Image 1 (cartoon, rainbow, N blue to C red):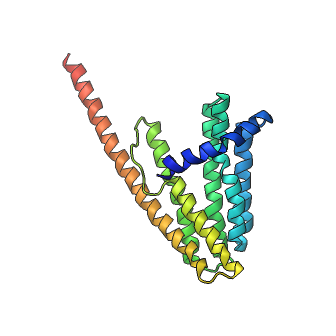
Image 2: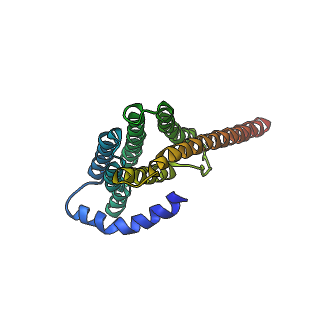
Image 3: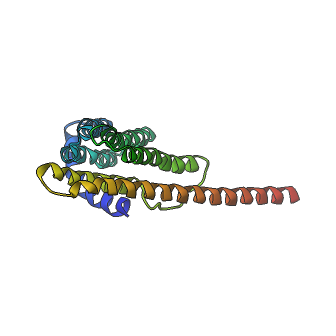
Length: 222
């Protein structure tokens, strides 16, 4: 749902900014690299120190590069396999940094091994969820399923919760518990999404294999 509606909205909002960058001679790949570097820096510098509010502010400023670079490529008419590959690969790097930052906090100053493990699970499951779709499509399957918690949902839930949890340092009581709740929600949602995709790929693979065998039988009968 977030991929469908929020992405369309922000794409329209960011189109003038993308056009401005094009006029300045900035390439989409440059925006992708800078955006990823900003997200990684925000996550791995601020989050391990427990500075969730400012870390989220920095990450949010850079995370929109994921929309800007694609918008620029479309305006330039330069959509390419390389650009898609770079964008997808660096998305995984950014996601890993965000949940890695949470894990570092809970392994250190946050002093909670359970939440450290949950953060690591969110990191790993997010990578595997993306891999299942990519791998399924690489063997010719459509992987036609909208998972419960995909990348957009993982980011929005985690970053919003982290940002609000960071208000605890400004004296807002009790709000720091939002982040642990969000991490559990993302962990469970990612697990459900992984199961959805595995089941879908298994069904589609069985259907494809059955269709191939039927075609072979038809050819043999001719």
